[in-house]
Length: 307
Image 1 (spheres, helix red, strand yellow):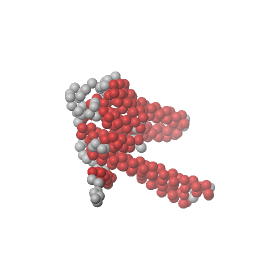
Image 2: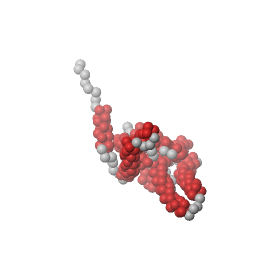
Image 3: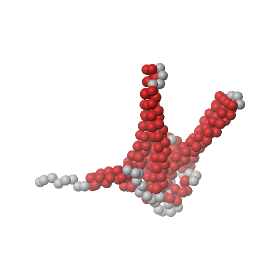
Image 4: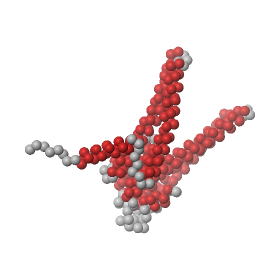
């Protein structure tokens, strides 16, 4: 085993870190890099897995913090605007200033998110053994990563990390499905655990995404009927108004349900990291049966033909 990173190792590591700049779309590259470099280079494998963790866990933390700060600023802005209106101040000017503050906060958080992958990519391109703050050293201990000793990474923990990051990526709308899909494609034939976890995660995330799209469809369908009735009578018809209210309520219920499904995805990732062979309710059992059936069929010998 060569513990010193080669040019190929550094390239894989740097590209894996830089893929974070694609904001979700690049999450497949660290998995591909890890699959190509595992049992070839501990250095490249660790850096790819670290980049994968940053794009799933880091993205989750980043988006939650951004939403939290935005909500706090909006709740602070409302009483300020009310006070300004009561005192006869220029409300439009105050709103414009708050919009600038919100925009600056958003840009600041985007800059904070991209700066670490850039630093990591530059460090790895120069041969450095970069560690992300908070996560890097913990992941190194979890994977038993140490360039000074002649031993491969902990294989079981590698697989669990990749599977768990697929679960955590549920907050990356649409593009998060690339993580379990890629893991299934590149490592599913080698490892039944990754295959099952990746397929059930992919099905679960696809279901959550379709549910989100369904809420939009229901809302806009109700709004469309409302507009149609207004176009006929010149004012909202009772039928269109009732349909719009019902559609809005259904959409709100779905939207409120989605965060609970996101939390379940995060819980699944946590349980996988803790050593569980987690199954999503219903989906996990169905996928398990499907895999067992297809594996049995593939392994069964062809039927004998009469001589």
